[in-house]
Image: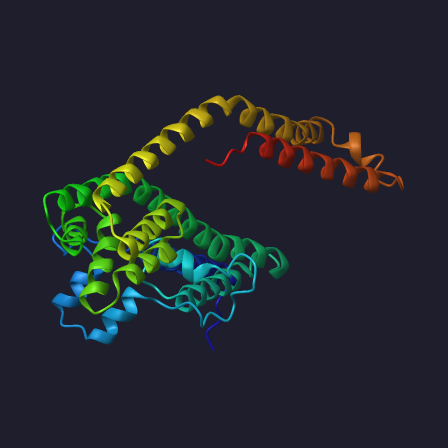
Length: 322
């Protein structure tokens, strides 16, 4: 029997761990960075229609359901289906979570020959579970922010179309075809819902529910009121577009005015941690010599609670909602 020395096995182990981590990273990258090129159709709905998808498949895309998410009550991952949908990702929440858990187990198993499992598991969970979900939420925030920026222009485009005599359905379709994503995909979805028989008001209410943005809810309510009572919808849309722009301007002004307070809250809250870290680095025995004292831990907990409370209170003082 051929004996293999430990020195011959270790390079293979290193190579296996490297390949496992690389494949995990590449898989998550492809899941989170799925995007359409310029040569493709403008959005997912158009691709489905062009490929001959059935009416049921398109309706499932138009009105995705998250009622079956069994982990909705759990913290951090309870809103995962909504986060994925609002981030513009088509992967299901179950598949995304399973991929993250599989990557966590893989990285833990790959790192177990070098570090103990209680240390490897939290590191792998942060790298393969917490980080991807955080990236999804950052992508969701970016997409929602882009949609809010595009919304006034979309309302102006609709108002101009209505003023020259185009039907509301035509102006909605014009936004979906003439503007860029994400507003184009959302208004294209509204247009398709109406084309497949949904009521106009219900389509806009679904839009507000999908995006969950205050300005979009104002738009849905405006369309619902005009649909029930009549009136000049083009003027309502122009007014709403101007109100949204004014709110953006006010937010930027308030953010600039409150920047000193926000910076102060960060500085004062981070200063105790900086002092503690510097002291431990320059003189490790400064705190460790008294760590056995019965009052050390209670006072440390009190100081930590006060620091966190200070940060939360100061952030609350400079956090304005417009």
